Structure formats: C-alpha cells, structure tokens
Amino acid sequence: MALKSTVGAHVIYVPVVLVAVVLSVVAFIYITAPVGLPGDNVVIEATWIKTEGQYELTANYGSGDNLRTADGAVIEVVGLDVTEDSWYLSGIYKERIYGKILSGNVRAGASIEVYRFIPESSTPTIVVTSVKADLNEYIASTTTNGVELTKLLSPTPDTLLSVYMVSPDKAWAGGNFGVYMWNGTGWFADPRSPLYATESIFMLSENMGWRVGSNAVVLKWNGSCWSEMNSATPSYLSSIYMLSENDGWAVGLARIVDYDNQTVENKGLVMRWDGSSWAEVSSPTTNELYSVHMLSPQNGWAVGENGTILMWDGSSWSEISSPTNNDLQSVYMLSENEGWAVGSLGTILKWDGNNWATFQSPTQSWLSSVYMLSENEGWAVGSGGTILNWDGSTWSEVQSPTEKSLYDIHMLTSTEGWAVGSEGTIVQFSSV
Image (cartoon, rainbow, N blue to C red; front, side, top):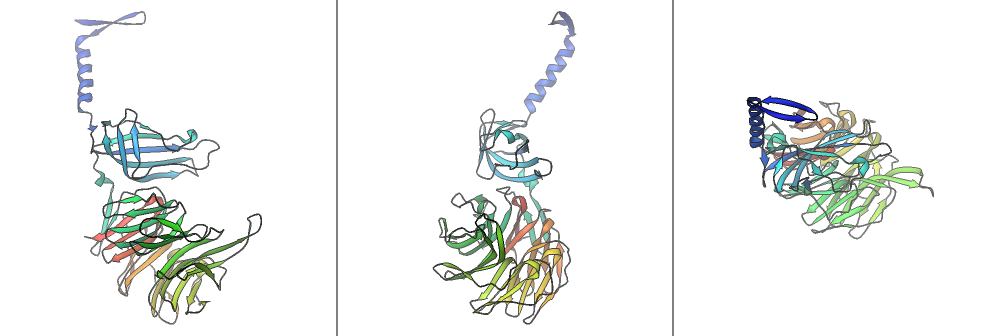
C-alpha cells in the first residue's frame, strides 16, 4: 500500500511504512525535547559582530536584567562570562549568559528579543543553548592550604579594578562603569552609583566609604547613596586610603592641560581629606602614583611608575631610594618596620625598617595587588589569573581558578576574601 503525493506536476508514491517511520521519529523528538519551566536555569550564548564604521560595543547584559524570548518567556540574568573578546581585532564579542526562567516555557534554540540600547549596526545573535542547566558546571574552583578559590558567575562583563570587604555579607567592587555590591548571597550592580570609572574603594564601615577614579573625582558612600565630594578635573586618582572619617589620602596622576585640552605636564598627584574637603598636597615626583597605604597620620607610603617610592613623615612626602625601575602597582605596610610592594614583571619588594630590597619572586607576571594578613601570611594577584601566597618565608604561586587578569585583592580573614579582575572576573576565598 502507498500514499499518493503531488509535488508540482509530478505524482509521487511513498510507501506507507516509510511515512510511519518518519512521523514516529519526529513525534519522538518533539515529546522528549527539554523544556525549561519557571524556576529552571538556562544558558544563553550572545554574539556581537562589528559592522563598518562602528567602534564601540554600546550595550550588553548583567545581573538583574530581564531577557525575553521571541515567544514571550522572560528570563532573569543571574551571571555571565565573556567567552571571546576580539572586538578591536576582528570585531567579534561573545558572552555566555546564565539565567533563570521567570515566566513562560523555554526550549533550547529559542532566540532572545533585543530591546536594550543596542544600535542596529551591532544587533547581536542571542540564543538559548541549554535549558534545565546546572550552573555549578560553570563555576571553577581550586584549593590551596585550606583555602578554596572559587571563580563565581559575574554580574557584569565590566572590568573590575578594586574590591573591599567589610564583613562576610558586605563587600563592594568597582569597575569601569560603576560599583557592584555583595549581599552575602550574590553580587549585583548598584543602580544608585554615578557611572564614574572606579580605580579604588575604601570602606570604613557598611555606612561610610570612599571611591576614586577617572577625572580625579572622589565619591563618598553614606549607607544609602554615593555623592561627589569634589569637582571633576583632567587628572586621575588610582588609590585611596582612609585612616578615619576625618583623615584620608588619595594618589594618582595630575594632568595639566592647555586651552585646547592638550597635556602640557604630568606629575604625581597626592590629595588629602581633612574632614571637610579634599586638597592637593605637594608631591616630589613627576611619575604617576598607583597605590597608597597609611599606617598613621605620621607614617605612610605610596608607590608608582618607574619604581617610584614615596614616604610620608607627618609633614611632607619625600622620595625614597628604590631597588627597581619596574612599575610598582601596590603597597601594603604591616608596620613601620615591615612592608611589601609588588609590580610589573613579577617584581616583589620588602621593607625592613631601613631599606627596600628586591625579594625572590616565583613569577614574571604583572602583579597588580598585594594584601598582607600578618608577617606570616599574605596574598598577591596579577595578570593571567596569577595568585601568590606568602607563608612567612616564601612567596609561591598557587593554582588559580581563572586565566583572566586579577587587579585587586582584599582579605577579611585567612579564609574570607575576594579578588577581582578583567571581564567581570570575581574570585572568592573561603574555607574548605
């Protein structure tokens, strides 16, 4: 027996048994195709392709945003990873977005409607690649000396430059496009934050903190919002350290410009807070300063470009002999007799109360930040996901859960801390 089918002017006879098999297969696939329901996790791949004349990628997604599928299902973004960033080389940018279904049903292969501020020239392809997903598969972790290092799902593709932890349930991270907060269960963007690039954050408490960055703007946190404390300038602040609510320091680069906004002079910038205003303090260097750490109103240190080291004696800053010409990115002082500085090409320096000396380093990676818990315990992070641990006698490199560059680290205890870096990378330090 056969079925007759007409195609154009042709008559085709198809055996019934063949049709039955085909229909059976199609029905089988339809019935067993995974369908995500509200509460299920999904994985979405997003691809942007640059078109001629386009220079910037003007929008992407982060935690808290909602995406909508073509058939009306709503997905909340809970995290993401940048999987390829060759925007300036080949014009391609890719993200893996992790989401939770809020309403509707979602099938693998469903396309996402683009509705946020993305110009037509860069309209991305956004497709659900997995439903009922186990997002733990996308969380990487390593263990060293009783500390677990976990790369979490990030709330943003923004490069994160600074992090500060106040308690296990409160932390802040700053990046090129604002500030992000940890509430004990997840990271999320702070919508109350002015969108200045944030190079450094220092929190005195949950209700008082400071941040600095582009245009030498200083912003203060009062427990509910960030407010600008000074006027924007062509200069730049890289680091801030607060001794109290009435005494603090910030360092960076003073950029002196002419009427056409062309730079005519650069110098190391030092600013001080006296409880009522920020004012520039005389600096002995023309090199940019990257980090400042204060022990008291009478003793503090700053480091920067070309191995620059400055010391504060309570009345003025003076330049101290440095054993390196490499850029120094971070300084941390334990006391007037012990401190550490790290920088480019794996540079590690130690202060013994009289001199700074080069200390043996296990890496050639660019070291961006150092944090000391005691004379016998400390951490440093840097390019390519580099993480170093100090045990009281030796700096050693430990296995990292990421290959993305890390720019800052802040530890609350030996087993509680955070490191942040490029493309929204966030690494949590916790007890095993």
